[in-house]
Image (cartoon, rainbow, N blue to C red; front, side, top):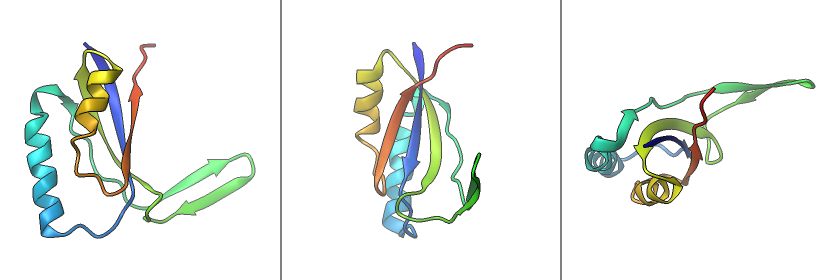
Length: 96
């Protein structure tokens, strides 16, 4: 098995229905979860040109989940079942 990171993005204030759907989604992929992650709030981007404040919004990265999957196709299939606000980016995690 390989590890994959889901980066969740897009923020709107969640409704009770969204919260319930997220709970059911996490239950449905429980056997694959390595780290259920945490939601993100405000942040900063630091570049050579300076620092930019990152408020929560529709383009924000809002959390992560790390899973085990056989390959990128399986990880993509699992991500596609998420009741995401905007979307999920799936990355294979490499070893160091």
